[in-house]
View 1 (cartoon, rainbow, N blue to C red):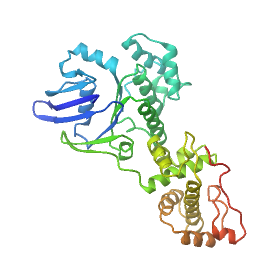
View 2: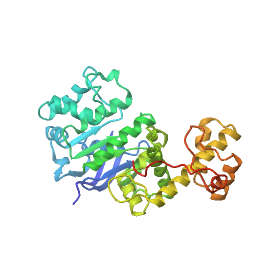
View 3: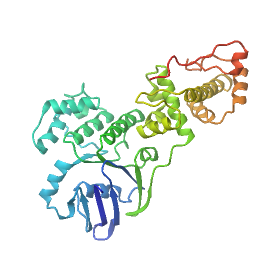
View 4: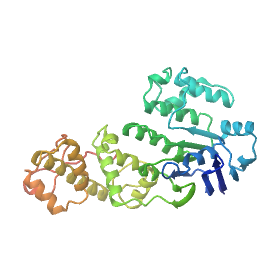
Length: 367
């Protein structure tokens, strides 16, 4: 049974411009829906309608059996307080209230402020040491995490997010997306507006808006072999004990979602169970991948003297296309190096064994 039903909704502005034109869609309980499309396509207008911040000129929106189109303004305010969590790109924090007080304000508007509960919500998003900081003293990523804690404090059934990572750097984007993955895993329905295809593919389903209409509806594409390699590279570095694995392998970290990890278990790359353990075949595949990548980094640095950012870009391409024979040729040409320019061990190959070297690998298959 659908959790949200949007039926032939039209929204006009200035009686002429149609922000939405007969849009119909359904959202299932616990589903993560990505709303995508160019600027001006109606994405934010749709989010405002779902949140009860606006009303349609035609059609209706039903959320968990409640027809928003039939609600009075006070009833829509109550609906937002009790059923919806809103996360904006621009944060909308009260500047003279601390992070803790901003979260407690949402509690107060809902029912009753509870300081320990608000503090726990901030601790859950990694801000336990920022409770008493004003917004001006927080970074962009920290402000967004306050917004997420505020949006979730009343346990809404529907979470709406409008470009929540649009103004964040890569590190903070990963942190915030991880929080949204946790929201999704808890079974809350999540509707996220985004321009970023890599963010959109984290969702269960995507819809594309064009000129106020639904131009397409897509399931994110199944993982490619390259996607699996990205996750394997991230897992290998974790096995090595690299605490910066999530930064160095940002794409693999973002893609290591529960559904993809389950897929890797089904493919025999990861062992069954809740722990992240490589199978023997998974270990061999990851070892070969890391070897190609680190040999390419060494070649580009020592032989071609490329800049570091160029080395990383080119190595990411070569790690997926080097044949075993070419990999051994590069290794022999370089004199069978034991480590890459970053000091990480390069797994040995057959050519290294014939040269009398010992195989290098992480000590454990578990992280």
